[in-house]
Length: 394
Image (cartoon, rainbow, N blue to C red; front, side, top):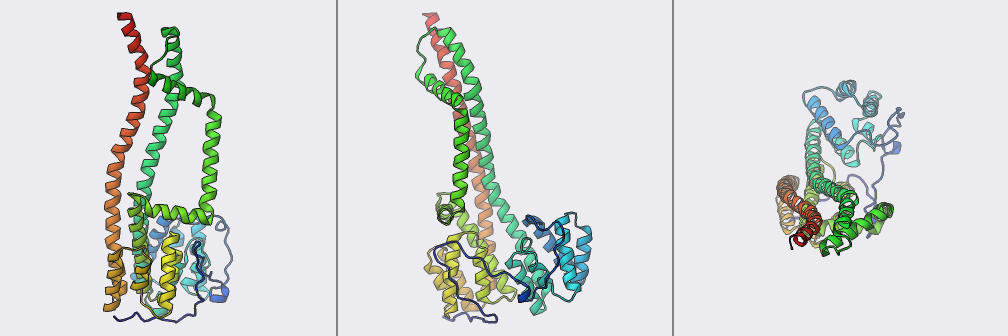
C-alpha cells in the first residue's frame, strides 16, 4: 500500500501530548513574520465577532476577491459597511497591515480572538501558493458548514433544556403556591380525617419545598458552581467529553459531528496546501473533544515517523471503520483531501438527519413527562374530594 508522503516545509517540535487536554499551538508573533500592530480601542475584551459573523465576513471577502478586487480594497469596503465597532477595528487593522507591506495572514494573526490558527494558516497557504481566491472560497464553505452543523447540535440540546425549565417552573408553582391552598381546604373539609396516600405524598413534598425553598435554591446554585469547576478541570473535561461520546442516543450524534469536524478541517487544510503535519496539529487543536484530539495526536506522531494516516487512526478505536477505510482508499489513490471532504459531507448529512429525528422524538416525550407530572398533582388534589363525596353519599 502506498504511503502518504510527508512534507516538512516547516520544522515542527515533537508533540508532547499525554492524557490531558490538547495543548495550544504556538502563537504567531512578530518573530514569525506578523508585524506588530497598534490595538484599536474596543477589541481588547471578548471576541469581536461570533462564528456566524465570521462565516458572513469570509463569504464576503471570498466573493470580492473572486470578482477581481484586490484584497486591501476588499477589506476597506467591508470595513466601511461593518456595523460592529470591535470587528470594524479588526478589519481596518488588517487593511493597514497590507497597506504597510504585510500580508493578509499577518493582519489576521494579530487578532487571535477573531481568527483562529486554522483560519490564519489556510490564508497563509493560499498566499504562498498564489491561490488566495480559491482558499478563501474553501474557507467560506468550511465556516458556513461548521456554523450550520454547530447550530443544529445546539438546537437539539437547547430545545429539551427549555422544555425542562418550563416544566420545572410549572411544577414549582403548583407545589409551592397551589397545593398549600388545597391543603388548607382539605383540612377544613375533612376535619382531621387522613388524606389519601397519593395526596399525602404530594402535600409532603410541597411542604418540604415551601419551608426549605432557600436551601433548595442554594443547593442548586452550589451544584451548578461545582459542576462548572469540575468541567474546567482536566479530569472533568476528559470525563465529560468521554460521556458525550458514550451517551445512548446523543453519543452517536456527537461522534458523527466530531468525525465531520475532523475530516472537513483536515481535508480543507490539505486542499489549501498546508503541510500534513501542520494540518494534523491544527486539526487536533480545533477538534473540540479531548479524546478525538488524543487520537489525532497519535496519528501525527505515526505520520511523522513515515506511516500513513489510516492505520494509526484505526488503532485509536474512536473513528468508525468506514471512515478509516475511505481514508485508506484516498491515500492509495492520491486523493486524500477530496476523500476527507466527501466523508465530511456524508457525516454532516447524517448529523442533520439525526438531529431532526431526535427533535421529533424529544418533543412528544417531554410533553408526556410534563403531562404526567401535572396529572399526578391534579389527581392528588381531587382524591380527597372524591372521598368526601363518598362519605356524604353514605
